[in-house]
Image 1 (tube, protein in one colour):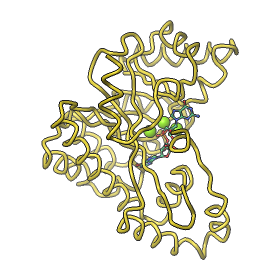
Image 2: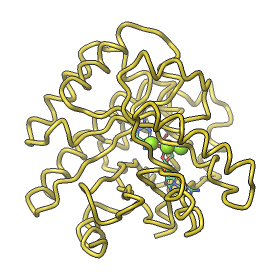
Image 3: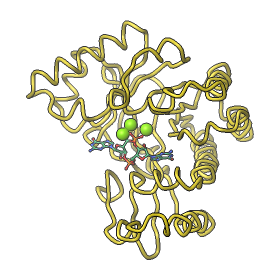
Length: 279
Ligand code: C2E
Ligand code: MG
Ligand code: MG
Ligand code: MG
């Protein structure tokens, strides 16, 4: 299970990227080929309520994986930036949403109607009708918009473009939740929290890393949580790796948490058993 999660770096893959310019086109076709040949799959990492783990809707984040016949397991941290540069992210994002819809439908039919968070990149916001398109895909399998969370990063919001704003409003109006991923690692101008229809922030795991030992880190985390709470934003803390961190989050009033200590990313087929043991 440990192999399936976290950051895996393929030496071969990174070597292949050395001559970026020449390889870019090759990698673009490798990704498109990979989609066709079913080399991609999705793991789901549970997001747990801190105060009452068994309460509320079951929620997960969809995390994409690539198992290449030559390069082996390639981390999304390595291939997503590449897919963004070549534009293959559009096909990948489309494929992932199809998979998520399919998995949602299966699990809902088995009595587990999940809330699923997906990651989206800047490039996927170029088409102003993208939001409407995603909503159409959900409706095809009967997945309510309220069951979808779209995670975007701060850098996406730093470019004030009408197109992005329109998509975000389309989604929000339909009932989709919008979360800022890796909060605190980007430009960290909190202005956008007023301007955009955001309802959740995910505090990057770097803030939690040295907690609770490092008192300055704890103060920083506490300040972030206070700001978010006063703006009535939902908070998810990322990267919870031990019970001390979980206890601290509870004490600071953070509502939700995600991390290896709580659950590792797992295939859709294991979610039912996981949420059953949760209570
Ligand atoms: P992210 O969205 O911030 O996802 C959380 C990452 O943290 C995941 O890495 C997850 O496995 C890892 N993680 C979870 N709990 C812990 C923990 O307790 N400790 C540590 N050290 N790590 C933890 P993963 O799956 O390798 O994904 C890396 C990044 O790749 C994601 O970061 C996201 O930015 C991107 N990504 C993944 N799937 C997609 C996708 O479908 N589309 C797009 N655009 N990006 C994706
Ligand atoms: Mg994410
Ligand atoms: Mg994140
Ligand atoms: Mg992250």
